[in-house]
Image (cartoon, rainbow, N blue to C red):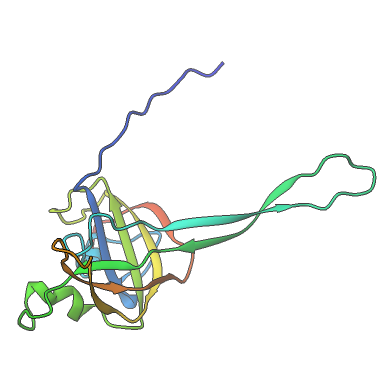
Length: 178
């Protein structure tokens, strides 16, 4: 019998990073460099704390039986990657070119690029060589302003649709260099 392994749990509150890198900003999704990621827009303090992460859904296909079989089997079919819309804070009354509108100004509508997730990385720190990230090729849709609710807890936000456009590179090590 295999010996039991207890990996423990890793709390990631405040330890999730999300960066948008323009399409020409990462040469190889399987080998991103610290310099390439530093050239992106760090959204860690713009994205809301309940920002959902990318998902994959794989169709399970039941194979047809032949006449003499009494059991049916499954196989995994097509996998579909999805990324929830980005929901970020913005101050619609802030002066242009300030931090309060940086994400709104820098994330263009209908642009290709990469959403890079770093889990269990301090949101205050840059991503360094040796860190592990997941890189999702994507297209950003048309953003729009909204509020988080209609009651007294409402804050101003914007929503930007994200479409995953190719297979991601999952848990890849960041290389040194630019």
